[in-house]
Length: 112
Length: 114
Image 1 (cartoon, rainbow over the protein chains, first blue to last red):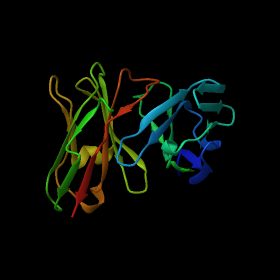
Image 2: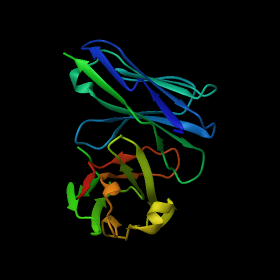
Image 3: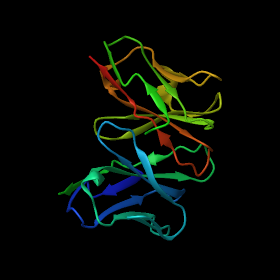
């Protein structure tokens, strides 16, 4: 069973619209979360990290974490065609070796 | 552009052949990770290092896979006897610290085992 589950599998939004991606963990040891984006033919690139309950905003991107429900979301405001990519949620626990566990990703398509 | 450099970008091997790929981590990052990303976008952690020391590795890495991060040389991941199931994108990432760490990925080496 995937310890980090993402939904939806794919998402299509119009240019200028809002994209909302979800991620849920099944492991209460996970305390730290990241969102990564991967364009075709490239490696994943970190968008933002979130470690505390509540919202974290960076430009057009807002992440929300609820540790009680182990749910983290990513909202992309004013979506652009260049935002079309695979988005991964990743999580890690306290201590250990720093290994991140990734979800299976959400494919976002922004329609011009 | 990524500051983690992976070579080669593409690697084609026959079954049973050795496959070796290299990674130069971002300058000043002592922690290096290797992940395998399959065609279903599943990430599988293989091994990580802090400087030259192995922090953690999975069973697969302990058998056909070998990896090292020597000082003053690129890190490397080698598959001793490639199998069709090893066909995947191999991603190297580096990080400035072990815990609560953001990983910085290279573009990957895409291995095809024929």
